Amino acid sequence: MPLVGIPEVEPGDDLANLILLALDRNSVTAASGDIIVVKQKVVSKAEGRLVKLSKVTPSKRASTLAAQEGKDPRLVQLVLSEAKRIVRKGHGVIITETAHGFVCANSGIDRSNVRRGYAALLPLDADASAKRLRKRFEEATGQKLAVVITDTFGRPWRRGQTDVAIGCSGLDPLLSFRGKRDRYGYSLKVTEPAVADEVAGAAELVMGKLSGVPAAVVRGARYARGEKGAKDLVIEADKDLFR
Amino acid sequence: MPLVGIPEVEPGDDLANLILLALDRNSVTAASGDIIVVKQKVVSKAEGRLVKLSKVTPSKRASTLAAQEGKDPRLVQLVLSEAKRIVRKGHGVIITETAHGFVCANSGIDRSNVRRGYAALLPLDADASAKRLRKRFEEATGQKLAVVITDTFGRPWRRGQTDVAIGCSGLDPLLSFRGKRDRYGYSLKVTEPAVADEVAGAAELVMGKLSGVPAAVVRGARYARGEKGAKDLVIEADKDLFR
Image (cartoon, rainbow over all chains, first blue to last red; front, side):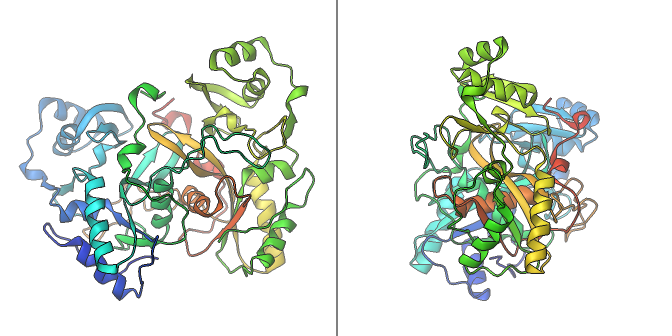
């Protein structure tokens, strides 16, 4: 269920309240187990994670890389500042590992749906943002809820992007079937659906990129309540075949 | 909407009919635009893409690789037979590029939810399978429908798996925003949501791995009707930063 009619979010806005008002406006009565999905962009805006590009001074490294990839050197400076390492570059794309451990284009920084001349950075800790939102939603509705904060990531080998979870609270991002057996007795050794990512993608199907719908409610998804965050989706370096 | 009560599928079964019967049994009246999501495993079974492991003779290469990764040499033989190349191996995992161009563990072959002693291979052409199913569904219901055939893939850098599209018909797997502008006038240069993959993940949230629900209906997702298949999700080799 898309939550339409949320006004433009500005730094310092009470995002939880804007979303609660939108639930009312969209006649959605939160039910226990509902997952409220919120786009990263509005979380970043509310948290003031916007940078005016004219105030950024690119380093020599950023300028060189920007020239190579045909990008704005000030944007590249921000990309490098938010990155632990560059994973790949080429075809005008810089794929980095962010401080959080996410691997994505441009350290998750982008200029779409923000005031011109500005760029939005990822929240510093989107799991903490999700937890704050969840507590507010639960207080206001009296229901046990979950929150997933989503961003749009590309992926190797497959064209296009899907929305994935960069923060979550109230649901375990992975649902483990490890050690469970199928109807033929076969042990499902490695099966762990990344439900937080699937919820993110499901919500994207009603939110879109242009329609100004920064939140949605996902109901009826099977997940396990838990305390883990989207941080737990990051593969440990020693188990990562793609370092 | 999960479609429960579909019986065990055997080679040669009329899968379209089994799913149509399940629509009735689940009181789901197909509406124009509905996407019927079907798991690869039942498509493979109906199409007879099952191999008895005791009939597979592993090559020397398969036996060596199997010993390295602690796997059944007959399974590894099948993995190699279905692969164009090995993309990565280690930690007991063999990631290959299949003949279709999909990059996934074990060439998409697995032994879960199949009779013991057998392995299920991916359909030879899941886009064609999806098209056949879609035509049957459209004939039977009189509605314009789409079909997505899904499998469970891991992904680099992120733990767990999500369901993705390996075949589709009636919907374009990508929704293009290229050249469109956001409300601030910013051009969305690279935005192409992989809706077929998001639909696959959304459906997984109600299907699960153990519950014997091999099909679901996704309603209300925004997508473009089109003739492209999941083949179009494969990145062209010369644009692939992860070769």
